[in-house]
Length: 110
Length: 116
Image (cartoon, rainbow over all chains, first blue to last red; front, side, top):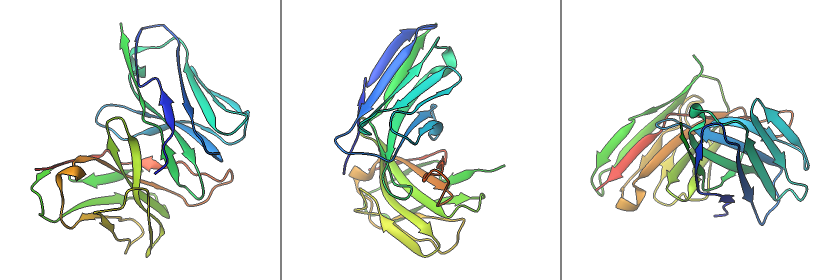
């Protein structure tokens, strides 16, 4: 099945640093989503993007839906310890069908 | 509290022994789905259901069955589990349609399955 290419696969940063991760696809998506997964839990939606070129913020998080509809990025500013986890991008095609990226594991050194 | 519940949370079994992982949601959602999560592969969809008695294959359906007899429940059945089905499984639910074409899927806490 199709997958999104998400990078980087892992990040080790200092508290307070900014974080950037992105996803690319060979196919077009109608909607791009960013999820976060805490240890031992299921993914939780952070940001949903519905239009090409859209830039959306949610607190310290900012995400953009690429103009070509084949890519998206997520930025986290001024990272804090609770940002630790695995971040997934996902593209939507058709009714509720999601294709996920491989995930970016974020580790923060205090 | 609105939630998606899965049982069991952890299961160790042996090859060939039939098992069922239950999923239940209390949000009156039409759409339910099962995913498996494997390192380096993200989440991959196994099966999904748009409503009662309506199910369809996802990207990796081989070796799995599902049923949707009631709106709130969507069990995942492994008739003859094999070691390559060792994985972390997530159930998710959502409303089927929304104003922007996508409704947020709410995920359960996961079931970690080991098949020996």
